Image (cartoon, rainbow, N blue to C red; front, side):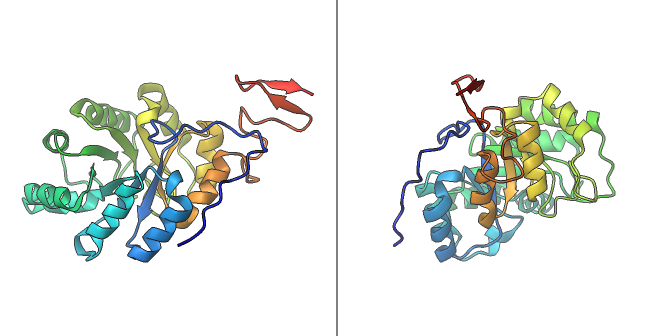
Length: 274
């Protein structure tokens, strides 16, 4: 087993809410780690992870799923199944079977998505209400097909309806590639859409999928260092935390409550000359 050394404490860094967090969530995309790799991830970065999503339909064919879910849960991390699996189960009339199997595996979160663009509003609402007695529901908005138009007002209305139906979190589609949904094909953020979401919805319940460093830095410097970010690769958990804390060039000296050279900050995050 690895020796775990507490980090030093001599820098003034932005405050991070302790787990279980209500904001500043790091939502990891697990694409089928081995049990050994899962244990290694948790030893080094488990304290920084809030939700681990076993992507798309991977959990269904992973023979080590139960053991890996147990590792995550023992570390205080919620475990989610990918929304695509739910969409396939719905198409085959197997949602109840998915529910029972997920519960038996120790899964605590189900993602209700419409990434395949096959669900109407009433059906998505029904699925959320049907599953909330058993799981925390992460309702995702947006299609995986880049040809589907992204209309700000429609996204906001869909997210409001998901929240009203009982979703605990609202997830904005970005995919593993970071080139659809809240992003243009070149990976740039649709800032008008983000502004519309922030104006109408409780930002602490929104998880923005942000698989790429530039996207993570944009959200941290624009929304705040405790923005909820999702689809984070396991190997990017610690690098993301350095972005949140201003320990990487992309965010260094740009976070509101981080001191600048020649001064310090008071508890309100205001600079005090020294």
